Image (tube, rainbow, N blue to C red; front, side, top):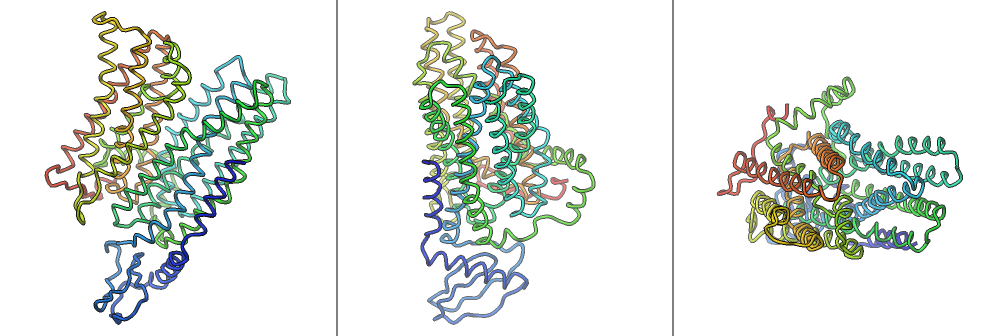
Length: 545
């Protein structure tokens, strides 16, 4: 009920925006639709006219000091979208992102807990589920990214929303049904059915996120870099907030239910199903509103040749995605980002299990998850503050420099962990294992400010420097690599699974971050001019083939 009332209030606030802004959106959409077929607009408007001029998606108030000459409309014309227009639409984007992220984080937190309640004597279902999801993302995301580049935008996003919600609802229904089943063979059959349903559901979530963040938002903002930075920063904050708010709300409900296993499964599944039922329509309405308010989203984003190529040989297109990623100038920068996923030094299952073993209080472990998210939100604010414009077109720091600073500072926060382990293992100093655990937790949580600052910078660089015709495919390969490195570090955890061997995983994690920082530095030296802050590099067709 709390979740439903929150979504209702958010949707209502978006629908009750200022009437003048709402009217401006309708005028901009209708005017641009009428002008979209012409290649050139000429003429002058009388200085006394108060009607807005709409050119190539921009809403510009008539100049009161003299006549206004409309610019030529063309593909290469710079788009200066009105700030009022952008920030009005962004409210709907924020609402859709909150609905999606809250439900996604709730399901990710609920599935292992419900699996343990159904199969209390085995961790195998949780391990197999996690492994299958990550493997499927690694294999299929490059192909899914290509569909982002070649599919009609509105249909694609609506299908991902509906597909994800149907998958979650069906999975919860099967889990609910397990409370009436005692035959173990039948229970395992239901588990495999849930696995088959959840894999495409998670792929749908990733496709929708790529489409919204890497395609829709850049088209909404046009050439307004300040708005692009701000919207991406807010989207990161929403995701981080949901990362601890959603599990907290779900855990609170389960704790209130008590230790009755069947009641926990039934109420847990019911909560997730009700959330998806209540939020599907508001999310769809927000997406449709953004689409109608941004006429450029209706423009075709694919060539007939690329679509035929996709339909003719899907698996060849999958291989081409990896080839295009490898040859792209942003490859090293993206690889630097993906290497950060090869770590156990984050408030995840392995680190929490180790810290619990050394004796860190459970309350502090729970608080560390929220603190890590809070520092992540602070990191997005920090990156936005560093990149703030001091004059038109002049920033305090360029994106590439902010990225260089943040990735090395993240390494600097993790390096002391290796020194602590070395001194303790080498008996240089006598540190109780509990003190070592507290110090590790401190460096991991506080350093996340720079991790999430780098996350935001890499996302902005990808949007600016990867051609929109291959952006979805490129992001799909990047997502696949992120999951690959996560699988690798967890496979390493299966080998060195004893708590007193955790230092091996710490060494591997810090080394991965060092490789990440080195890869980014190498990319910066090869493709960026730090002195002139030239952040836009030419991308020729040879880089995309």
